[in-house]
Image 1: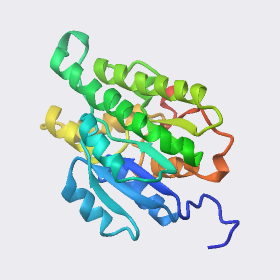
Image 2: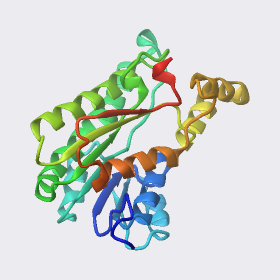
Image 3: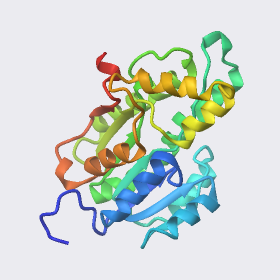
Length: 251
């Protein structure tokens, strides 16, 4: 590979949580293609192993990010880390009065505590490598989205944690956050199946129109922004919260 080819990650070790499906899978593929040594971390071991088998030099590792023991075990097997993609997350539909305490606690456990645990154990390695962290937030962390009380709250925390890390570690490593609009992933299909089983096409059309550009985002569009942010070309970018939302937050 020519030295001046942009957005290369040759020899860089990249850990991607929730790396076996959706945005995580596309990021794993994009990073492997760019020359990174990818660690596909996922709670679904079979999916992670199936993906890793397709990506030369990668490895699959089982991890439940909500368990500190599981996260510690993961990092005991990672002696070096250049890039962390905090991608694993879940959704929740409902306004404040419709949100059960157990569901609110669960979404925070995954989206907030999970990111905290992985970050806490990754930071010493990222400091050592002067690495890069990219957190996958959401437009829901920046604006109010109807019937997404718990989800908005959890993604708002992801945005705030990213900015705080950039302030605490301004020269040690870079920390940025990507806030996608609605992206066409299994995550969205699961939402349609659970909440709109008998009107999928109608609701899918509404989701498309929620973005002024008139369509859902594609997982590889998010993956390639993560690739840029993790590359040498983005060496002046830290503490940034970047939307990829088809114009949603501009409207």
